[in-house]
Image 1 (tube, rainbow over the protein chains, first blue to last red):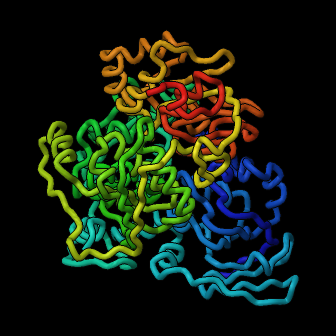
Image 2 (image 1 turned 90 degrees about the vertical axis):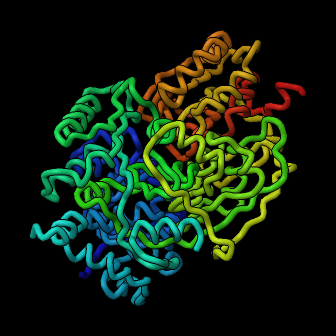
Image 3 (image 1 turned 45 degrees about the horizontal axis):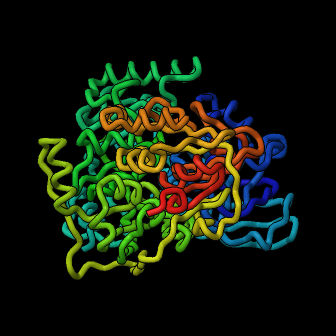
Amino acid sequence: MKLEGKAVIYGDNIDTDIIIPGRYLVLQDPKELAKHAMEGIDPKFPEKAKEGVILVAGKNFGCGSSREEAPVALKHANVKCVIAESFARIFYRNAINIGLPILEAEIRDKVSEGDELVVDVVSGVIENKTKGITLKAKPLPKLALEIINAGGLVHYTRKKLSLE
Amino acid sequence: MNIVEKILARASGQKKVEPGQIVDAKVDVAMFHDLTGPRSIESFKKIGVEKVWDPDKIVVIFDHDVPPSTIKAAELQKRVREFVKKQGIRKFYDVGRGGVCHVVMLEKGHVKPGDLIVGADSHTVTYGALGAFAAGIGATDMAAVLATGSIWLRVPEAIKFDIRGGLQRFVTAKDVILHIIGMIGSDGATYKAMIFSGSVVNEMGIDGRATMCNMSIEAGAKAGIIEPDEKTIQYVRERTNDPFTPLRSDPDAEFSQVFDVDVSDLEPQVALPPSVDKVKPVSELGEVEIDQAFVGTCTNGRLDDLRLVAEILKGRKVKDGVRFVIIPGSQEVYEKALQEGLIETFVKAGAIVGAPGCGPCIGISRGVLADGEVCVSAANRNFVGRMGSPKAKIYLASPATVAASAITGKITDPREVVKA
């Protein structure tokens, strides 16, 4: 699975209230949620992400709430993949479950805002086309890949229950 | 094995488990609320199973926007109510019947030592206060649990905090946990469990233990847990007749790290905006004027917390220009606070008392902040935009510090307001 997009760079501890503030959680439509993605620190983000972006962030991305709306908002804002130094565990599970690819890698010093990235989620190879360098992320655990390959946890569970 | 490994071994039907291992565990109790319910139900329907795995193991509590403040919220609650009825879920706490989910779960006997509990809310970790392994999950994970009764979990490494010394007057469980988060950082326990032990924890009541475990998520923990003792057993026995088997760490149990924390000299602590690990003693804070003070939530909305607030407010007045919002954590807490005269003390002091629920903590219900305003809060998160305007600032502190600050109008050590 190869994903392409321009890099958008954020720092450490990007929490779920930044990704999607609590007051928007009554919005059920993913497209409506996406309009408020990253509103906490970057109100212009939905415009920026339109063409497809790859987020590159520091440690503890997605800390805070269990709200699945956080990865949903990013996914529907056209975030192709999130690459962070580390993730908060609930966000990590949620992203895998709803089919937003995420990878752990420390690459912030090798990527500039707007760089063209190509990411291979299975191998963890990240190509920075703008800088002409190849970077490497920690490969996803086997189970996470299985869930992603099944099309998310809903389909994974359906398969487990022999419903498909 | 340590207590965490023992619970996960039991729940996954294995003799022994080790950190890093992935287990498929059977869930004893699953909880969701009005805000995470709709998406959980939607995903459950997509899985395509007619009936939940066991309606008696599911608890549903409305707390995030109660009573609903918008038509949209009312509609979502209606949808959850219909699901609850259709599925025959009897442990349902509608508006006016429960309160903050993590307060209700403990006080109504839905948490037992040795249980594996998952909740569609990050502060599910609170239930570790009674010796359960409890982790927060998202809506689709919850849907899979509703369908199958099981969940995959990675057995976490466990960090043990041995907390010793004696707490000074008006220094509370909240100050201890803020101090610990300041020490290890907001990702200091990511993917790990935090085990709290030592004489200070032994002396704490269940309310204080709940505060400690509740905030373990603010260090990234998968679970916060305290080994069950006599106090735990008594608390649970008073609330449920269901059988349970308390589990404790073996004498040779292993931990990935052990911290000795001496709290004898600990002062009241404050977490500065916008992160929970920017922690300072109140004496090093300088002058911070406030517009609002807030006590309530799954962190500090319990009876012991309200008693502490009343002790400080009694015979005093909330400073002009300060709004002091107090929200009892549950109907039960509210009723006891009424019986003990605490609510009267709050009202006479000029505080406003809200309906049991999450209140302004997540910026949905009444009590949100305007641009540039400052709030000192006994809740758990001070993130940008958490309580309303992204330009507001939230300082986290104990209920005692919040009450003292409401009186003086600036963040204040409670010991300065109530001289010994």
